Image (cartoon, rainbow, N blue to C red; front, side, top):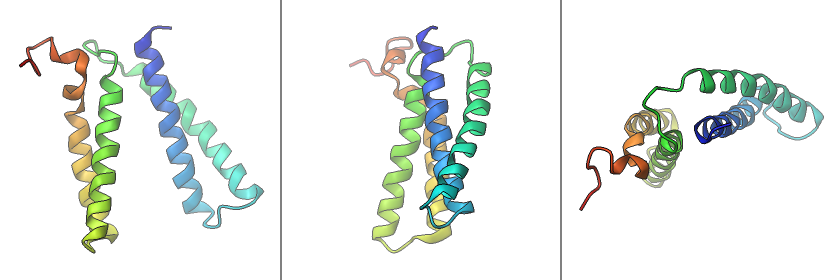
Amino acid sequence: MDALRLERLAWAVVFAAVVAVFGTLLVVPDPTGAVAAGVALVVFAVVSVLAARFALGSIPRDAVVGDQTARYLAFFVVALALRVAFGALGFGGFAGAAVAFGAAWLAAMWGERLNPKRWGERGEGAA
């Protein structure tokens, strides 16, 4: 298995774990006991298969190892930073979450430019 496919599979597993945790918290608000663990395992099993199939079936021709990682890290860093900043300013709730999600999504759309392996391709990042 090449590194590009391995990277995409790893992020599919991370995505499935995040969906399983938040999905379980929505369905079973008290995350203690066997019911919550069972729901989390079922959600993880279903989402991981779907996410892996989609991740491996949608690799762009110009993809470089590290693109997916740069996108996910850009998304998580921007989302977390904005949620913390909005929370500190008292601008939480749905509006703060929506703005943070939108900004994080935009950062992820441009996240592949943060991949150091791409900097030498087009002269980006060169001093």
